[in-house]
Image (cartoon, rainbow, N blue to C red; front, side, top):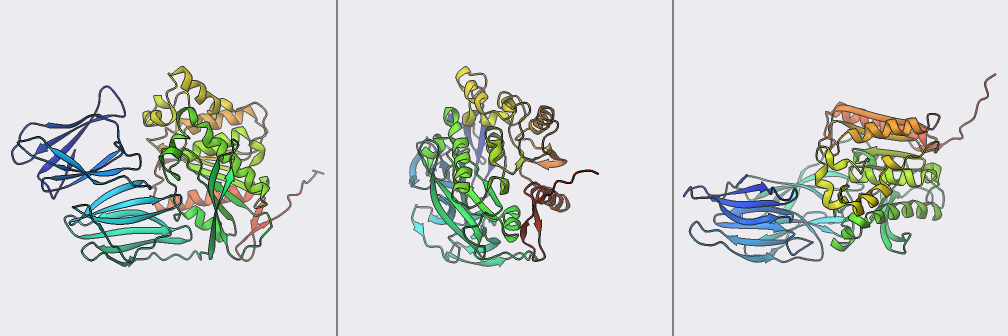
Length: 468
């Protein structure tokens, strides 16, 4: 149930008994105490809303893969009427917020950045000033009933900064900048394209310190999300910041299944087309080696949630291509994922194991089912915990046992497992520091690196010592 402080209406969303991913929506007038009135039945579209008085503003994917805003005029006595307030555009809208009499829309500017735009309640676009346009809008918090919004923004080489936005003037100013003793290098990001195995051109961004040598293979971390139409924009993370500060190259591939190139890009990497996601990711790794950015023994792949599935599939398909793998909060048993907590959310994305045609596709890439006896897989660190209610921790527990049993003399298969580890990664600060430290200790050892006196990566040759 959604209650709006600025409105007399309540919105009630009830999951449909006929379809796990569909909802029935009703409105209820708080003053008249009249009956629940249906808005939409078996509504499978992504939807969020806000209200002012008797106007309901709905951000929805209905007839608009990139989302549009509808305006509903609610009435306690007659039928509700609606019109399109803000039509679908070329870039996907990812969230909507109400600040005073202004609608704030966060839009993913494909393929890598996100921006904030403002509209009047009549649909007229307003000017905003003072917000960076080369990074990611992380979060938006609006004062209850007020005209001020706090906007958190970051970039691949820029720490999250909170801006205070006055929607009456459209002017934003810095409200808070965090302090950190970690000195971030001056970085450059190159956006280019590579060809996947079927000839599809895929966007890729390579971020590295400007002072790093060119033409020399360097320690490289490759990641990709590749699912649910998510646009993985240029944003700050502790892992990428630390990796870049140590002199590593950080790479993101905009593989099919994500939203980097719009709704069609998402459809090209879901259900029966899901193998395209993994083919694109493997092709990115091959391209990085071919272009001389790195070598397989210096190439780490890392990802969580859907990205955890991506790196695990790549590891099982091409184990010789990677020097280390970090796999966090993933789905790994794709023939049983829907039977565990939160698994049904993935049915529209991956398909149902109970459908024979979809099960055959799932079986073809399911990491758990594609582990082979005696294969020398790269060192891998799995991360999960009891509090993950989206991707059940049974996946990593089974996978670790399966890999250790399949090749007991192989390279390390490790599990960082914590009772308070959830899907979002939120943990007490001490645990977060400890977890990140474990990951970098694992990466340094697995890739044959050390940290020199200048705090930078330095490769070393691992000697084989013959016992006397």
